[in-house]
Length: 356
Image (cartoon, rainbow, N blue to C red; front, side, top):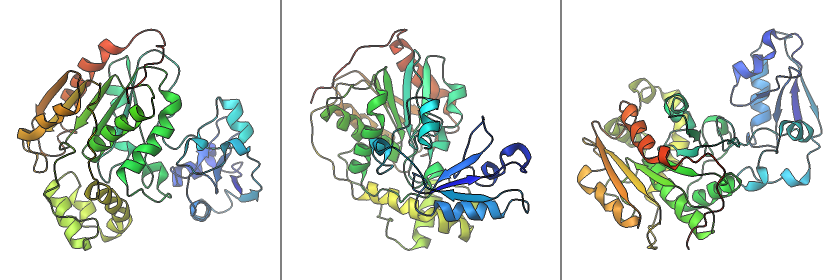
């Protein structure tokens, strides 16, 4: 079913977008706000939509349901490439489908530069990279990736298998590797970026110009911290306090933690059940970043990442704990620029196939 909000009496034609920004898509041409209940917003999307509209001023909005006439080519799970966005705006309006859920700030545009696909830490979303577009040098196009169970994909069940998620990401990115690109991931995102690079290589897809691994231990090392993905809530919260990076106000709010914990447990399940598989090194230059006071990833062991590439690698240690990425973002971006600006040609490159 298609849920459409009649916004004729709604100030600014955007009340739904204000009350539930992760649930609705607004059309700037006709002033309507629409949501697809069978799309990538999740099975509870229509109920959430109704609740959001109920919060609007009385009579300002109404909801109407009508059958969704969507071509078979775009049907299927939002976790597969079948749910890719349309080729242009006209096709989007014709098919009545929402934007590609994997790209939090829009799909890559066909322009010169290097695309930087960014993956979040455990419990994080694409929003952790929201300022990077303004900080990145001109040739670098930052594209935060939204994985299921958070941000704009809150209504979807989170994934609990890291290698499986790497495969889903490879599906989502396959049509966007026609220009030079790089992968960046912090903590869980670093391990995920590594497995994504290996998945892309195994599929014979264009390899990245660079791999940035931040705040993550080398994949073959065993985890030494106690598992928490199935631990009591109090133990999970204690671990988050030790790591830092989560405001105390959130950790102390039982209601917020009730919402947050399912995604966090799923992310820790990915990390704690991950099993490294020995494969040949990548043929991709690598930058490994770490914090000098990180309680999770010892700076003395960051060099172990170097065995996972046959290409040049660089180690960057910055002041800070596990979440050094945020206070030291200027230095992180300097490392990104040093690696990617020279790799930004003015013309679309031809295929650069990976070596299996």
